[in-house]
Length: 161
Image (cartoon, rainbow, N blue to C red; front, top):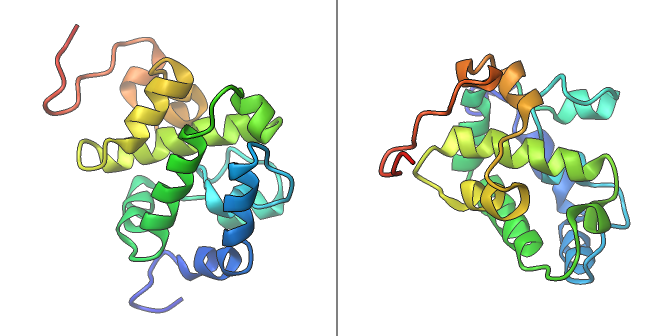
């Protein structure tokens, strides 16, 4: 692992290079048809059960923040998330199939937590796709205290209801 890439984020850049145009073609068609979920919408390591899920799993909130700040990966994740949110008239299950619809929930939960208020897109995705609910498995794995029934504290600038 390189000193300037302590989380080995290059693994994502390398995996995305050959499929990123395909990802957008498929999302514009409203249906994921090929295998790219692990490295386009990564989730927390340990939630998936395959070697591929483990390899592309994000190990911590610090790694998720580094992913968001990466000059290639951050903008790609944002663009892919916006492409999903632009699809109308289809459920996430129709777009991704199962279990990739759940992986999307895990992904936007992870990055909403990592970004906090600096990038509202992932909280918007939670609001639009999941009625604002974060993925419980992600919260539990991160040992977030409010994952076990206690209300989430508001993000900075957010009103408490």
